[in-house]
Image 1 (cartoon, rainbow, N blue to C red):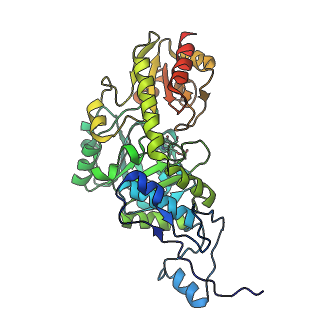
Image 2: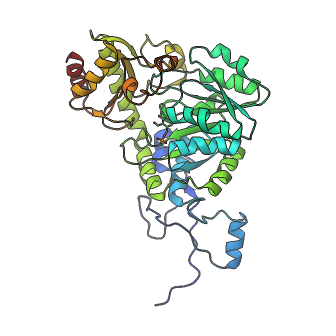
Length: 407
Ligand SMILES: Cc1ncc(COP(=O)(O)O)c(C=O)c1O
């Protein structure tokens, strides 16, 4: 039997997206690549590096972008397109591109949108590698960054210069769970004609949609709650069409693309994002309340606790408080290390947003190279413990934390 040279063309770019869908949960489940002739229910894994064309004209027109076709998986792939289309819908964005990691999403966004001589104004409390980009790598291209502390947002406008292009923040912050007012950031960005870029990794679009407040681009480490099961690395940037086009062109030439396999995993994960995140938040709130009354704890920071310094802002912009709880154990670095050593069930790991509860002690691990002054600048005290609350039974999580605090 000979195969026909011209394959029946399946338009894998097109997504099944029914007009009756109005809700987040349904969109996350029902947004799907167009079915192939096999009529599969779940989206297949398109583990292919490239795609075929019917003839020379089809290939020419596809490369000239006269046709919306997959060319090569560094550019697009049905699995990555499905994942991106879900995040675009969830964040209320116009367009997006998926990356191998969250850091690839952040670096490529800067790489595409910034020119030599541009300036960034950023919150000081940002993820460690993002901070390293600002301090070590972007200056190589003559791009400087000025910082404001999370509790000094009134200083932001004073930091803006004529060459400032980007206002950057994450909220809630990692690891101290501080909150920045997205409405305020949106207004400042608009007034000064800046691009507002928000890392929405800790909240996920289920809890918070920065575009609603004026963000131009939202970036994510999909490695965290979007996967939610600690399996794959991934990243995504979504936002305004013209900006994403720049990010796409930069990325299609520099190569940080997400693998189809990871996209397939992530797209499936998004089907349960809403229900997972609700339960994460429910558990985290109970852990925070428990810690607030614990004798061996100085203070607890959780966005939906009334004691959180930005409680009102958190309530305004987030649906629930997220899955990260920060607290200060009495006894500083020694007590923090002792707490980690006494934990029985929870994992000691660098990740977060997993079904498994994870505890970290930043002062003796991730941030141990910083001086005490530098650590305190970003709210990392000696006894700060970060708990990424998982989906185990709440009693088991609390019992483990309690027994470790008492040792
Ligand atoms: C807030 C935040 N942004 C970005 C990243 C980087 O993501 P990835 O590890 O997927 O590169 C992380 C990782 O922990 C993070 O917590």
